Image 1 (cartoon, helix red, strand yellow):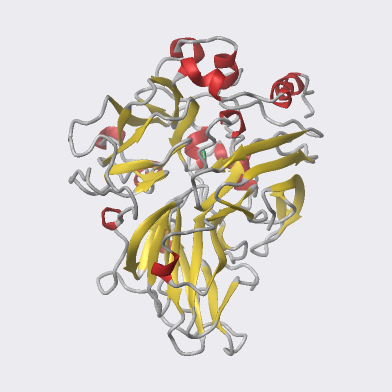
Image 2: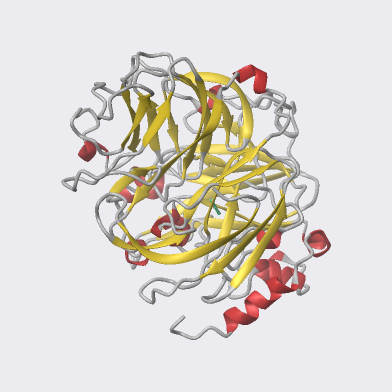
Length: 514
Ligand code: C2O
């Protein structure tokens, strides 16, 4: 792991995490990248050094610190052509930001095209030095991070142009196997009988959701997306791309090995989840004293016999009410976002009929240069101007009319908002509104076709912020909008360093070979 002040080199390498060797883009020379660790209240200064050399892949980069609010440093949020110009090869950029009032589990990833699918992704852990709720959980060890990733045998620009992209394998803590591949190592997580553990579960997925469970053990959820929750015990949970959970596990079973399972939402049947000999999508929970062998435990918790996490059961631990509650009409601004897709000539996703394309000048730079009107920043429909200090309510839906391609039916859409967490007033699959104590998070799964969700947040963070589907292929194909929050205050609230301006000069001077 690395601390809050560190260099982070971005490099090309060849790696075979599932036994298949391919060209990758790495942070800190590993997949996943090193865990970035800090404490609530820390100032972070992470110097991202672009050492990319592989001309068959993109050589520019930009890093997003997913879930951190970046208050006062919108310029460090990492969205390429939204918050900054990308970092060119041989260049570096110091991301400095503070984390005054957040703690929990976050992650970082490239926010340049679909580069994170090629490897540039890792976890962030923000400890809370005086966690008021530590006693509630009575945890002996909270050092374990479990990353869940999809993995591809093709480099992503190739994949992104295809209408259907299936992962070649999945990786738990950077290890996994593919169908008919070699017997590559699986990740092992060691526990001692009788102890209690906080596992920080991070989906660094580009696309699939994962059904996560550990044979023979229940999981008590205490955090969702960097927000403490009331303890909720489940047998398994569904975690979408970009989401995080902290779960407490009590090592109360006999000394042995147990399967940790993270079953991707597709290809589904092809992965034969019930085949006990199939060692894909798995890692090992090993008790101290157990043999160094694979588990013999049989099956994942089965549907009807097990308790699966329902988002509507999650409650924030503190200040549970949604902004504007209890009034059902307590929002100042209502926005309806409706997804759409066209397949020909290539896949383009849209919101309210507009497919997002990054502007040629970063949105933040346009605002700092004096643009005051959202319509001057981007095509109408790609950007929404939000007034300061208001309750914003957003409904995101995927109409039934979209049609029946498997591109649509296989996937729900996890939407992520930068710069905020939000209250999920209505979850996918539910028609009940909850203003009193809804879960607060930063990625919400918007459900299957015909479904929709409603979220609320307060505009207390001036700057342009992305809202987008965290299926990276969909973001790249236009499933995004920008909220330009409090445009009049954006410049004063986000003083930019000279190095930030220099990035755009350097970017403008890049050669085609870069
Ligand atoms: Cu984790 Cu805009 O993304």
